[in-house]
Length: 215
Image (tube, rainbow, N blue to C red; front, side):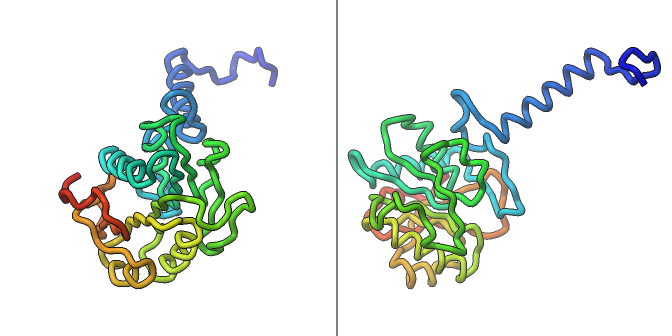
């Protein structure tokens, strides 16, 4: 069949425009760029990877807490917490040092900030990341299991100089205290979708997250 065959199916201009818009939106979700590439949710959740993004308000609140806790010229590690990393970059595009430790390679779009991370191999990290090189580590283990928390805790303790901000289910409070010496905050993290499990924040330092339990 030739390109000029009259029987070839043809798309209307309207349909073609709609398809082009659809593919452009899909590309934006997989290859974010420009001024909006750090917006929370620009990369869609992958439920198979147990991804559930924080609400914009929660991500910003946690990012603000991280900046305050890290201090001037501090370094921030976001372990399985991409929403917080994105909010950090929205707040401070270039004025902070932040790294995103993620299994999902779509986040490699963030260049040198991205570090591939598999919690099953908690200390399999690049040589250019020495022990205790971050002023605060924010972590959100992908699964509500003690095994996942225990392995993620190894990573957290390796990375942090001291401060830890952990977001996980309320059911993990006892093992979190035992493994990381953290305590529950008043602040309650929210997600863009209503999750069946109750989530909480835990810290091992005097944080600003005890002011209220809203968001």
